[in-house]
Length: 495
Image (cartoon, rainbow, N blue to C red; front, side, top):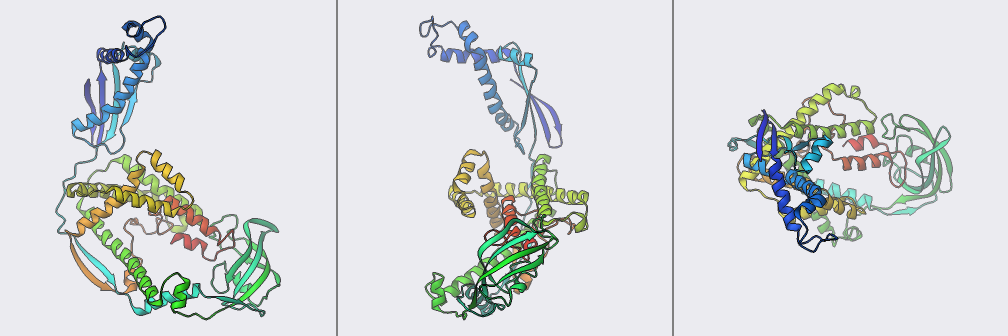
């Protein structure tokens, strides 16, 4: 077998592999000898079939198997021998000429194929002890904990039916039917929908027109959908809603006590307070973590500049751009609305894709040198978390991971990355700084936001997963159950 390098340009490589026809014939004859005692052919005793006849009957199929095995097994072996790692699966090109293929299967022509790939560049790691990060930590006050508990108590408060007119704060139970130009629209109907007046769940003007109604009242109200409403067929249009009020209920007193905790399945009010404090600490800890991680990545980005495999960049860019297009479609906006152009946006997001790929390679090298590994238990926990996100689809998701090559890598990658960050945090210079809640949660530039602030129509456009965006889009289009116009649908889907 001959292995000839025909291209070495930057990270691009092209390798020509030639296996002489005689070698292919030798391999075929070895296979025929293996099956000679196993095959049964009419007119011949077992084990007495002439090799020439076996070749005539089985030669081409055995040769086809050999070709497939060579194409499967040789590329990894060749890369290993060359000490190279391919950024993506190498592209394999073989002859498309039918006559030439027949000659190869008949061992009358050399078998040739070409490997095309990009190598992962060699990365010489630099000391990280010069990296300095500030870890912002916000103290949690009793007032903040009590405020969150109050919100929980308000959401769990009881309501008692009343005979009077509905006022702000009352809960109304209604049936409604929405129409545009006199025609009912999809998702514009619901029955026994419950709405607390003043909660601003529906589009402007909807809830206000229910104030003053009482049980048994019927009314037609007119509202206008926001211009940026996610459902384009409704955006900016005037609509009417036929309202039937079935109940008006006044809110009960909000009390924070053991009884409230019991309603929530918690043993006591003190334990409720502990849980709420823990949740806030977890939320703030996540923000702190992301800010620290961003500082590390930014400094690594400055430390390492090298050519990146363009196929990886193109794949990353395609993923980002799909999300951008989804966000634009859902918001009903254009690039012009965001003071940019598609050309400029593409340029900015391509830079982002290159940054992601470069940092991914650096983190991979750091993790490999540090012996960072992802255990099977960690992968199983990540898979379980995926299943929890999509109740009712567990079977399909498990089937996807079983049947899709490399799917588990999508679970492994973020775990590996976080473990590498953990490792780096033991080596870089970290200074803790106590800040206010407002300072911690300040909406500064995100790690993967392009330099041009308005290149993206939404904050998390480059970051959100497609499945999350789809779920957010469905939720934004309508409130609970089937549909009623949410006031902040478009804004909610952007957060």
